[in-house]
Length: 241
Image (cartoon, rainbow, N blue to C red):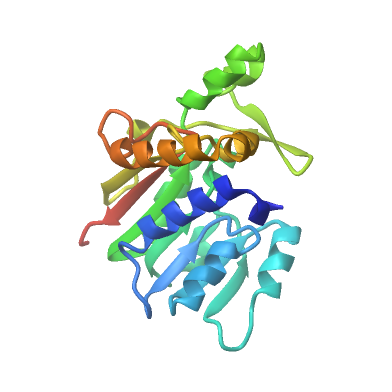
């Protein structure tokens, strides 16, 4: 289970902290690919007015289970390619975690649609998987060359989550554009710290993992590496229109 993996929790805590630099209680937040709703419920419990979207029946079921009368959490069955269905509603913030947007080869279309749903001055904090992930080198040492080089091919790579395979595209931070918006922040995730699928390393070497966490804190925002890692965070802000 996710809650048993400390590396997942470490990543999620960093992403939430980065998002909360811009989000305030009483403001509106649109989450894309909300999944099981852990992040949506977290922000809603802080008083943020959350609209959680997904189009997978299993995920929607879990999202609905987290709703309750006192929680400002709305659930919408909606693909991230259908955001214009929310018009004319606009949001103070948008959010997508754990590379959910890597599941499409139409990311420019998603970002264009998302920009139309942001209020002037609104922000979008997105977690994307890049092509350069230093921990993939570990797979080279294990002789698993196909896995180590999966991000470097021109086409999609197949990823597996809970036994389900799906195509995944990898996007360098330097290629991301959101019309009418500017980049105001970036941060590498699991650059030095083992990514979540290396939980065995963290369990076996807890002191080394903590040292890597401290080291990553020092370098994760440097211009040369902030778009690397197992994932990276990028934050856009909509210009006044």
